[in-house]
Image 1: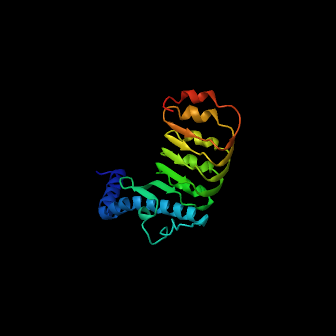
Image 2: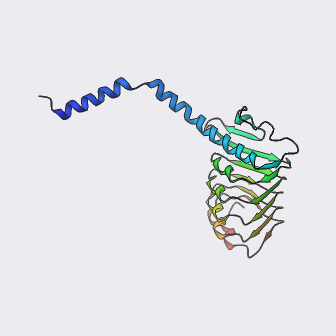
Image 3: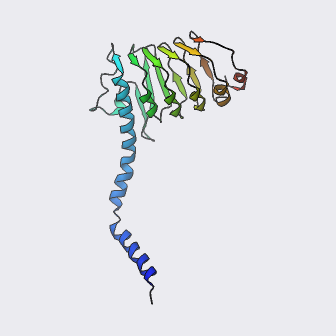
Length: 205
């Protein structure tokens, strides 16, 4: 005699078999990357909302009707379906360095150089764990380098020169960047205090 439990399990399996639609599940899988790119696009448009002057119309095609991978200055990683590079050089943008850029968690390169971005460097940028190249030189940024930058353990190039940054350089930076950091320039700012001895751990600097 078949037990009630066995019959119940058999009925559940039948239900799964007859309600399983491969097309639906394949569609869900296929749309997952689109949701990632959609989130990246939303983050970039939020950044644009904080820009109050764009004299060279660099961000003119940053809008809902354009594929995010076609935005000026943007490059995508087609394999991972994420924005991987944001490079805006000599664009003379005026506005806030928005923390919304921290949602671009697939970024490898972030260069916004020789503009007029103001505000502090968002501590949220520590979520950009894949970041290898960060250039924010030639802006009007103030405040310290966030302590959370120590979490950017893949960082190879960090250029923050010619801003209005202040504060001290954390020893934790050089402890966590010891195997990755190759180029560092924080000149023409207002940092104070001693250079941490931990900088000697950065063997590739």
